[in-house]
Length: 196
Image (cartoon, rainbow, N blue to C red; front, side, top):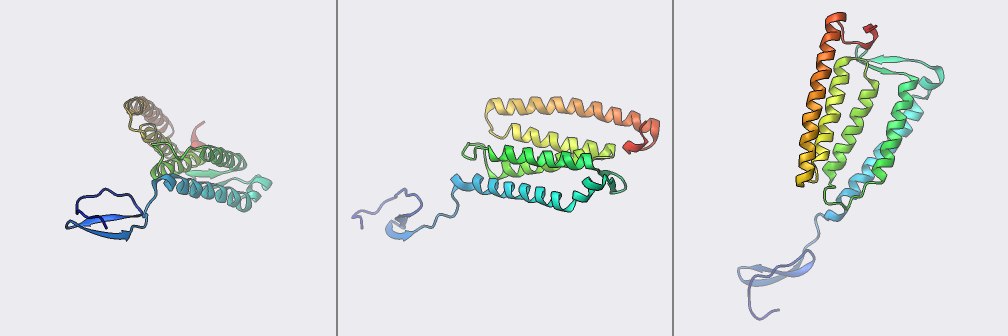
């Protein structure tokens, strides 16, 4: 035990803790280790992606074999053999991208992996869209998540790039909404099947 009481800085593990200028020794269990935070989320995201690939192959293989097309949610979403292949391609590329992510970078965190997973979800909704409203919501979801991912490192250049991307995507969104409004005025429906 040290002879003079005082303030001591210590790390997690065995070490002295000052309580009213008296030394007490006890063990601090590390509650959270930041070095492995991204790895855990990365492994979870990879497992979810691989599980969805397997479930898509097992459950929807008859759609691909029999060349059937299904419509869901009042024909807002469609599932056909082409969309089946496109969803599998999105998931396979997502597995490759997530596998090569360096989780030790300063901007990587579990929230970053969650944003990437949500972006993958919106990509699959975009592929399945059969309605202009669903198309717009999926594109906006991808756009807003990409804006956040671009500005995630919180450096001056990353924030500037994120703001430039946000301004550019807002102009593109306005043009898309204008086009959807013109198509709706002509056809009185948002469904892709009625646009000819």
